[in-house]
Image (cartoon, rainbow, N blue to C red):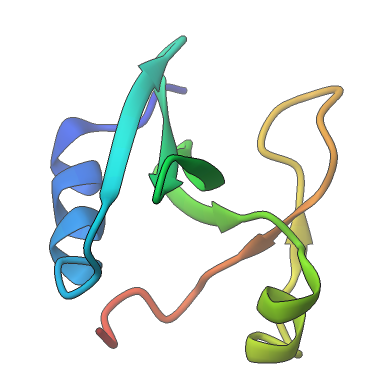
Length: 83
């Protein structure tokens, strides 16, 4: 299932206080960049971020999920309503 442009816009709105957030559409999903580096993406209308040490510390209880078959697990951001 592809992610919706509406969900992408919602997530970008939640991240609007950060400078240098961008995205790229890729095969029906969206890759998120911060300062030109991939930080995560929108997959099946789920916000997933790379499990780097700082993200793991910030989201210690986050579930790991696959963005798509064959990919590495990423952290699921469940509290997307809390900016």
